[in-house]
Length: 433
Image 1: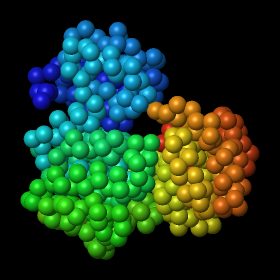
Image 2 (image 1 turned 90 degrees about the horizontal axis):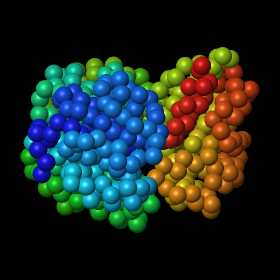
Image 3 (image 1 turned 135 degrees about the horizontal axis):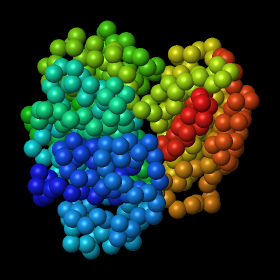
């Protein structure tokens, strides 16, 4: 166990990651010296530099770790992308932790509310944190996106409440020991790591078993995959699907966001937060970065939105919500597939998820932590979308080409959506500028 209170100098490898940057911000808030590295500059790294972090960009080397560093925290993607680099770090006489291990240490001694699930966990985490803030409980929060109201992915609270997003990838959420666990849903994802649905469920089951009897597991029993994951749970099971949504008037479209809000309401009810306080908080909720975020308009008057949706269910739910909110507008979906393995394994599911788009534009696959796979591409996905939906699909190789193409076809009465977990949001930035 590492006593973070005694550490003054921390180095982050992969500091630009959304979770990593939140912990970096927490340490900066506590007055620690923060340094870090990342392969590419981003809005996040630039913001951290302005907040006091010293960051190097480019190839990450052991020799760039500052003298006097007392702790190294590394990204979850590092073991896959840079195994040799990680091996060198482990040989150093400096303690090192993965992001999930560091988050587990932070949560010790806290009353932790952990939000897990294949879909919706970022939004639910942000909603719960916002409700607790508005209810005067002064929580700390580490969120997988930036709260637009707080303008940060880290909230520094004064109480012992901690709200965190619990990521299932590589079973990283097992580092946590939550008092309250939210399990939004369980679906097929991260199949570059998990063998199958049963393997995924076993990870959630192990997490659910950690919740004590005085805590609670808040979940949705209409999801058929939930049952096996909670059958060994000792804590009370609360079904948020049965929570009444009377008085709920969200600023965001879609049944999936109503479901997210009901999960947050269930947690608020368990904590005895007055319903009127929770409802007002949710109805005023401004959302998070890259979750149906309105970026602006094009010169021709088309509305531009950006969303992190990167798997079939999220895309399908988002497009259905957009159709509900804008029934008379034409929808252009610009999608950047994320990971070769995910695109290949869920090819059919991705193809049918674009049914509610009028026009689909695909960018090349964002590889993230993976090596290239020549057996899958955005062109292959495009052909499958045409077969499954009959939609017009265009593939382009660069963001500038996409922006030029969209500017030619989009006009007033169109909705443009940039979708994906990579850097596709940059297309939206080009379009509105």
